[in-house]
Length: 93
Image (tube, rainbow, N blue to C red; front, side, top):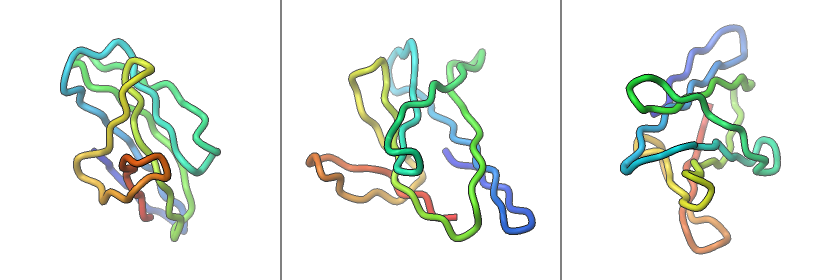
């Protein structure tokens, strides 16, 4: 799930991932930083989240890496084909 708050040409994006199965850790990976993983924080309810800041008009591909081996897209975001045969989520700000 994505929550986007816009102000003065900038956007704060909260990425929230609800695991479909048991998850020990979830990392956010995206094209904004050459797909370097960023560990997401785990909430008491089992969801994972992280907040990032971007500029208005930016567009990026991203996804969630669960337990270091399973790739998943955001259920609420548009998806696009990845060069590896799977799908990536698309973030348009």
